[in-house]
Image (cartoon, rainbow, N blue to C red; front, side, top):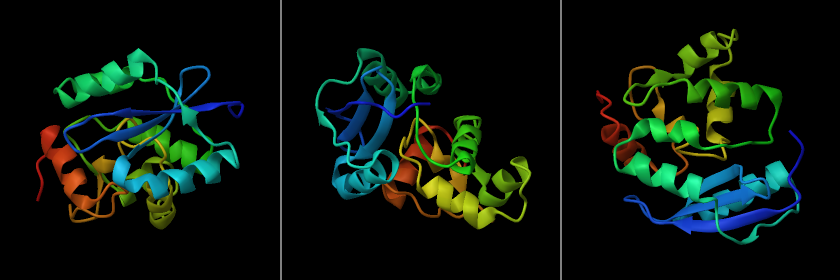
Length: 172
């Protein structure tokens, strides 16, 4: 996918705090991060898009509505969000696998590595998971530690726990 020529930054209220939404000129979601992690968003944008800085602008109504419906309990609405990322082919493979984890379910880094045909790449899967620029829509929060422990989440572990409970996941 070609790099965007322009990035737009919008804000969306959520039960977990304001979300920063970065979309491109085609209406694709390129990044989503919580407002209190704007530094992380900036790092991810620099990593993926170099010096291209977002300018204020509205995200497509479809993106905003799908996220609002997700927070209202309609979890399948996330599948309607059109998104694109930069990143390595391995990272994009991990992110594509994350989208396949159903709401209310979790998986482990090891299971994801096996699914990708790289059973020894648990740490690499974890690093790719942590570099996911499209949180919630690409549900990195559904990945837990080997024994079901809540481990790292860019938005913070309390938000990860809230998202999993919101989706009906059973937490150990």
